[in-house]
Amino acid sequence: MKAIKRNILLNPGPSTTTDTVKYAQVVPDICPREKDFGGLMKGLREDLVKIVHGDLDKYTSVLFCGSGTINIDVCINSLLPEGKKVLVVDNGAYSTRAVEVCQFYGLPHIDLKFPVDQRPDLAVVEETLKNNPDIGLVHTTHNETGTGILNPIREIGALAHKYGAVFTVDTTSTYAMRPIDIEKDNIDFCMASAQKGLMAFTGLSFVVGNRAIIEKSKDYPKRSYYCNLWLQYDFFERTGEMHFTPPVQTIYSTIQALKEYWAEGEEAKWARHTRVFNAINKGLDDLGFRQVIKPEWRTGLVSSAIYPDDPNWSFEAVHDYCYERGFTIYPGKISTTNTFRLCALGAIDEADIVDFFKVFREALEKNNIAIPVKYND
Ligand SMILES: *Cc1c(COP(=O)(O)O)cnc(C)c1O
Image (cartoon, rainbow, N blue to C red):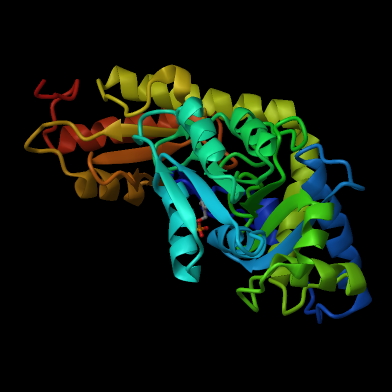
C-alpha cells in the first residue's frame, strides 16, 4: 500500500483520514442492488446505533446520500405533525441553519435566539414551551461548530419531553467523538456524517433515532420526496437498500472507519481528541490568542480564536503559509466577531499539533505579526 501525502486538517470536517480508510474505497465495481452490498449496509446501520449506545429494538439508523445538512433537512421536514410548530434553541450558525430549513418549507417555528458565546437559558426554553403548547418538535445543536460551545442537550431534551415534543439534536460535530448515550441524553433523533467523527468521507449522512416515532411520522405531511425520513426508513426495512443510489465507495470506507473506531474504543478516542484539543489551547494561549468561548463551556473539539488587532494580521497570509506546509486552518462563523477555528477531529494526535504550532508561529513571524499577539483593549 503506497502512503498518501498526509495533510493535517484543522477545519471542522472533512477530517484527516487514515490510509487504510482511504484505500478501503478502492474495491471491485459492484452494483449496490446486489445482495452482497445490502448485507454490508445492515451491519453498518446497526453499528451507527451502537455508537450512541442505542437499543437496537428501540432505535434505528437511516442513511442518506448527501452532506451533513441533509440530516437537518430530513428531521425537520419529516417529524413535524400537522398543526404543530418547531422550536429551535439557537445560539449559533448551525442551529440557524435549522431555522432556515423551517423557512424554506414554510413551517411554523420559533427561533429562540441566544448570544453565540452563551449557553441557552433553560428557564427561557421552558417558558417558551409552556406558552406554546403547539410546539411538536424541539431542535438544537450539541456542539455548535461555529464557536465550539457545548449545549446542555440532556436538560433541553428533558424539557422537550416534559411538554410532549420530539427532540432532534444536530450531533454532527460530536458523534463518534464526545460520547453520547441516546436514551440517557433524552435524544429522540441525532445525526452525523461519515466525514466528521468517523473519519471517513463525504457523501454518507445518517439519522439515528426512535423507531416508533418514525413509524408514527408515516401519517405526517410529506414535505419532500427525496428527503423524507419515513420513506427512506420504510424502503430500508422492506428491501435492506437505500431508496436511490447509495454512495458506494464512501460506504466501503465508512465500514473500514467503523472497524478502526471499535479498535480504538470510545474512551481512548475521546481521550485522544481531548489531548489534541488541550494542545491546541496551549498553543493558542502561548501565542496570546483570545477565544470566544470560556473554557468551562467548550465542547473540547473546536477552538474559536479572535483575530488580533495587529495591522499586519492577515488570516489569508497565515492560512496560505500553513496550507503550503500541509496544515489547514479555517475561518470562523460568527457575524459579529472575526475569528478563525482550529478543530480536534480526525486521525491526528498531540504531536501533529506541536508540529502545527511551529509552522503557525513561523507564519506569524514571516508576516511581522507581533508575538504575543496584540489586542487593543
Ligand atoms: C459539519 C456540520 C454539519 C453539516 O455540514 P455539511 O457542510 O452539510 O456537511 C451540520 N451540523 C454541524 C453541527 C456540523 O458541524
